[in-house]
Length: 241
Image (cartoon, rainbow, N blue to C red; front, side):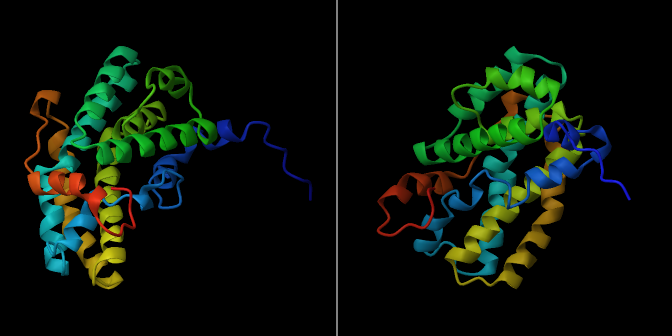
């Protein structure tokens, strides 16, 4: 038996098209170093005020975020970032990113999307390089919104937009449920049921946003946005948002 030939460029190897959707699974894994575990998107405040005390409360809160809140806006932004990157249009990509950063309703939520976006883009660029990623990543400075970074990486690696959107919305839902399990009297099994109940809605959202323009971005989750402002004044905090 002979030893396998050494891989001189690990990044080039893992970025090979033959891996199919595996890069996406890695990027949206809880183990990927973006720091998502540190953010609750104002769920911490909602739990403290009693808005979320049961699995039913959590389900209703997250349904609103999916249908009327930031999840819908982020999915639209991801779709347009993916299209811009797929076309190699750095100017359009930067414009989508500028809009994404400007839409954050509070400093904490801006930190949430920009810190994760920068961490994601740096990690993917280092471990999963691709020519288009290397060409376009420099236009996303100094701040990069997380959905924009994911849209760029997905297009750069040839991942279909529909699949990226499905995975993104479900991963976003799972992260919020994980935060709620750590904050509220909601067990892991109940949290898993909430994710399963929201999966059809997540897929409908992913399909819907593919045909929407940037002008159709909008949210109507004022209480959640207000919670992000009040989060910084909570007596105790586990999360950064």
